[in-house]
Image 1 (tube, helix red, strand yellow):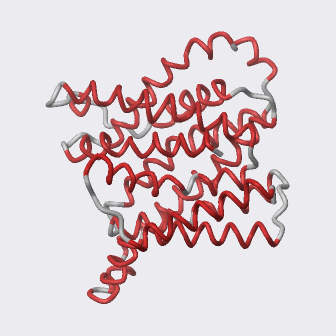
Image 2 (tube, one colour):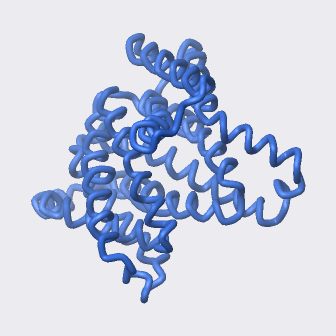
Image 3 (cartoon, helix red, strand yellow):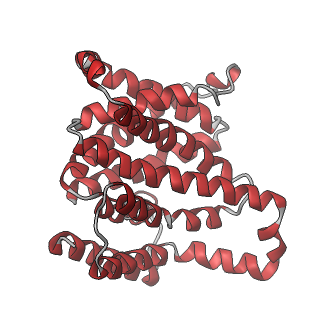
Length: 297
């Protein structure tokens, strides 16, 4: 549990660099591509050492890496980023909170993880907590409904919903198939390396090759490398270490700590205050996750 929480904290630190890079005019797809390129090189020695294993890979292994790398690491990230072009950002973030529902259902279907009633109850408590953490986003969506509800049913909005659905399904499936790879005996570094390599090859089809790779501010390259080391390599190492010990249906619950960690990072580094509703949501999420972990539902 602590390993997944550590990964969530490192992903939250990511926002201090990623969003300023995007706001500075850097193409998000270029950022994701360079991120995967650097991470592939970071894990390259491990991948090279395990080349003899390629002959023993099955179709199931290949499909799992495809889902984790191309689906979760590449396509889902691009779809989520693109959804902001068509939907209010608060609505995009709010809809993304339902990703655990997809992961839980897939874990039950693919990994045969049981869903007893106590688990469903406490998972629902965690989901409510995660939604309360996004209280400001809910308020903005309600205001949007009051001001211009037609925007939520426009052709552009429908495209946005479709993109969010792709990202939610992609990330949910990535959690489940990542767990499947750990059950098949793959080590965390092997899964992470394969994830970024496959993701790199998938993203290459979406990259706008050309001047977009030349950053106006040269220090942005350093920021990108720092982000990759902490929120990429180190975070994924913690993530897959935790996944080795937990069921996918529990991992996806603990992943909901990411928005809480993001709020805490904003409080620590940017001085943004937490509301009472967000604190309540964080408390519910923490309590529900601890119950699920200790009771082993």
